[in-house]
Image 1 (cartoon, one colour):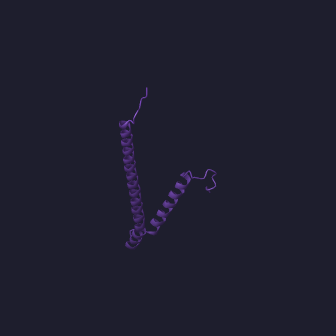
Image 2 (image 1 turned 135 degrees about the horizontal axis):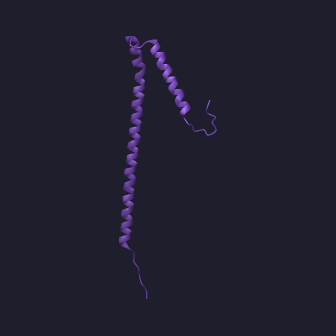
Image 3 (image 1 turned 30 degrees about the vertical axis):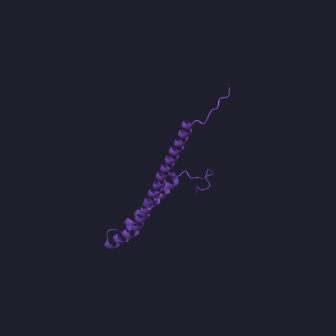
Length: 101
């Protein structure tokens, strides 16, 4: 007895629908990733812009007499201390420790 089994059209349609759903989900995930990258770049640009304002504000404070030389030196010392602590706290990517001073 010959039994001719045809294609299971219902299963094929379900597979095609699942693949379409997967592609849509991947496209949406890529869109969210791209938006996150764009937002990160925008935030970095804002930080750079704000950092550029610091020297101007300091110069204006010097001119207006709101910032003295000792205040300036204290601020420089604090920045140096912060940089030193960040360096000490960083684990570094070099497992040999060659980057450490």
